[in-house]
Length: 302
Length: 115
Image (tube, rainbow over all chains, first blue to last red; front, side):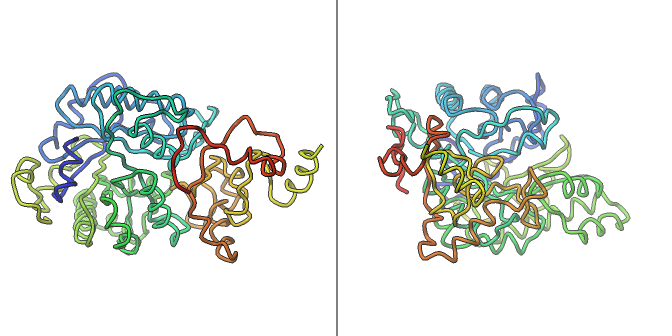
């Protein structure tokens, strides 16, 4: 059982974080600033359709460095055979946490001429991974020993059709998802509407908090990242502030504080686009203890 | 011959892509193969605030339409079905024939998900 699964099963507040993209080196330096706080770190899969080191390779590197990985797997770049191979490879290396996503389209990236695959969708990928955990590939061919996975998915409460998003998340739960790392939301009311008892009672919900250092970065996210909107009043508030960087941090703290206060939220997923942009600082500010302290304490919400 | 007739009928009305395993019935009579990512189980997270497609901004998201339309149908709950992976061998064949023979209901041997 993975550390993340154990913490969630025990009802402890969990923290995951998104590792900055990795090409050919520097893995440890990327998570070192916050390694004491997080239960697991996501090895991303060609984020925003830009090529990087493969998520399985990064997940192995994380594991070798003593950090528990969450291997992201998207449907954009691989057909079902390749996806099953990645899952089997993950199991071979003892990687259990797998987060299954659809993936941004190739046109969001820097090689928009690439062929998009989407042989499976994220629900089908989850079901395939679950089936592998049950002991066979999609073909029905046996896997011995059957791998153990702790499966997760992503859902975006902030994208239309809004009133269908909980049902879509429930579909992912039926397919095998046990945790959901929610897409970054800068609109607390949308997150609050999404975190419903019928969902939270079945799956661990981890809203994502995005740490940026400048209002320009907020604008960039609003304009260029598919599925994430930043309300203009937040951007303006940060622009008007005497110290815009500090104000961006304040916004992240407020969003994190709101997210963790929602009944049914099991933890947070933290995303920072810069190495020193403050994941550890955010934890300290919100009074979230280190992983070790959390593990040794009773399961109470922090 | 039947495939040609089916294409002639369904392409203009539904934008049918002749996947050969039609699920229009459970997707609000909206063809999910019109989605640039060919998603069969709901919208991706990239849908724009105006309900348009991440990939083709000029097009309304197929799943925004599917969810809306399915609510007007007596079998609205079918939108929540988990649809199995596409059998790529059926592309270009008639889904009418595949429905009649039951071929469109065949799933991989290892697919054990209740709809």
